[in-house]
Image 1 (cartoon, rainbow, N blue to C red):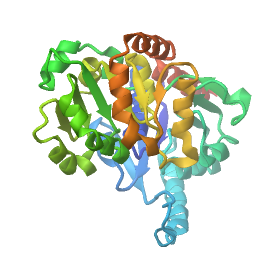
Image 2: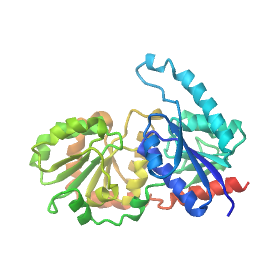
Image 3: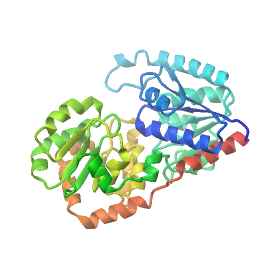
Image 4: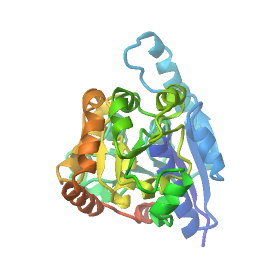
Length: 364
């Protein structure tokens, strides 16, 4: 099989990075001779996670628009210009057959540079409502791989292929049982379990909702596995002190086991939704308001409208989230309905579908 050369750009959060790595792994599986280069944003999570997965990554000096602070955005135009130039030189030196954008700060400059250099591009759009950058990039993209149906009002219909969102291999396989998860995290086998995950960076309002309901948590018969995020861990650890059924963790290194031991799950509504669909547990989604185009709310509503999840708004979470979780935990009929409907939305072989599209572009 002939060598193909692929640049994959994007990152910022686990929701972008893990699908990107899944795509790279699927390319290598289909074409072991493939050469893959990642391009990310300096200082962001991808600069650590991608090398850990065994791939080379180069960084661009790019950042996003900072809401609420004009001064922090003064250097942004210079960073964009610098990133476009750096991206162009990276593309010319690597000579890729195709450039793939998965979202995140680096994706825009890299795909724009690829277009300018005459390299075909593929967009992987994880959300049900695309941001401005991907709308612009879509004009020159050969293929746009989407997670949700009904994107024709945003992207050219003839370019759209519904592939789903690639997820981590360990989630696809899900070998661990509920008992394995309970044992691994040191939980009580006789208690129902609520998994709270705010994503790799943590979620402030979700964490605050736990603190606001600490007395109710203490009195409950359930237990909570609480992924707080690095930024909030020290404060959350203090909240959990003396509460035996509240288990605060900075990061969950065995996410498959965390999903396995959960009876219900509380989560943000980014790329993690694709994992939740495959896991098939009852879910409460709390969309982050701090994202472009409020796309997490659109993602959550795509599930809510199919009775596949419950949504609690971020600004209502502090008062209502934990109460809603306990109500769901005691409503087996609703749990079954949510679980059945969310499973029907799962696309387990998304990475392979995206790679098929990438290979088609390369062959042309």
